[in-house]
Length: 354
Image (cartoon, rainbow, N blue to C red; front, side):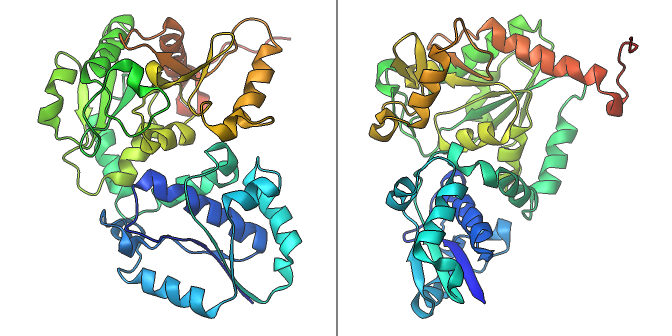
């Protein structure tokens, strides 16, 4: 039996965060089908991700041959919604059963696009981590980054996206929009706010597509480590951000992936968020699909409105002025303090009683 699942690439490819979404969806489809998942056609990608994942420059030709010779089925956003939405593994199971795909001996299932958001990819989170860690340059780069960091200080990861984004715009123009460069002064004020609340006992890991010299205004007077001089650092940068004790996000899919792969608290540019009744905010709540009954955003709003007061969380909105909420810094401090009570890292615990 030959059943393949493939994240279909039509054009010149996209950034790593964008490529990972259909790749993870194709991985889940392969598990549902009992087949094999192939990587995207990185040969079409001008960022040369094929070097990271060991794929051929001509992989796109092989993909087109497969599509020409194998029975082909595409799993689209419309299919996803028609089969229940939510967890894509469940939607794919219904799709496979409805189409009788398990009975086929040969099949190529393709999927493409950024639709669905991160929540529908929960079943592929470990796959994404394993794939990134297993990429060609990640292990050595992560060791280099580790050697630059002070093991005695917590790490705040800052993602500054500048190179291929437009210039910063007024705060009110960010609402509901991605792929815009955030104001450099916002990053600076965020870092200073954290530095002051931590009494200087903190270090910043700055990941950016801009060279370190362009970021001097952001980092002056702060303890900073850069990765911009490390070659082939796409995967290692993403992993390093995800391993930080606190993450400062840009408005990009790269930062979304870092937050998704992390368990740490993270900060988001407040003016980018969509307001909802009761003082709640969301990233994608402005989209028509998230305004429909039963959407992820509306389900979350319904859940929080059933409970009085604020709920504990790991995401924090930071206003344009850059003042970081005290609770976010408390989470950073607590996360760091846990290491002194982690037994397998030579930590200590109080004596058990009772």
